[in-house]
Image (cartoon, rainbow, N blue to C red; front, side, top):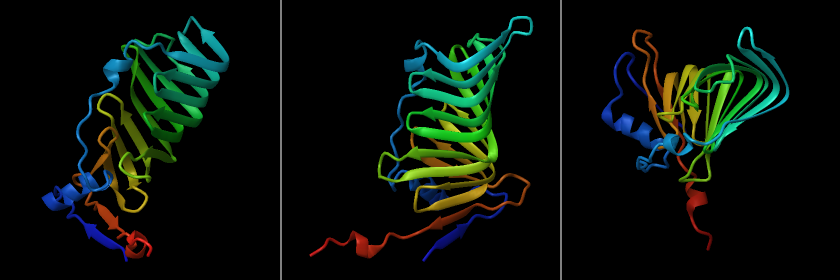
Length: 218
């Protein structure tokens, strides 16, 4: 039987509920903070592989078809990519068609994405779809976290994934939905709050484990 808990609109979640949210996707145990991988990949090369390219030096734009960009454990692929030049020190890329972004076990999929490169690193990815999708294999269980929303912003510096617009997130058993959800990829924790002034609500569905499945066989 599902148990649903609702927060009051326009107010922060109560401490016990917030603690439950924070631990839910970590298998009930708060994860220890980990060092950001940004420094480790800063000096790694960025590789671009495409079926074709069209470089316009006058407008400083590049168009790639069937493109894959990789740097360390980060991988971005799409049917089409448009970039404001090949200088990854400061450039913005627009990807369309079967967009897929992978990083350290996390995957984002959408119809369209904008990716910002700063100082030779992929910094922020903003994806949009109907809906945009996110998933990550959980380290404390065999389950996979799944999320969807109209817009998903992945800040790779902080390892935060922000889902807005009919946002939904599940760890394979429990579910959270609301207008805005913030998921910490590194610590596998989630924060859900109603948007100020919207009167929205945060909904949590907790499905108890089947006690019969947990009992050892005689």
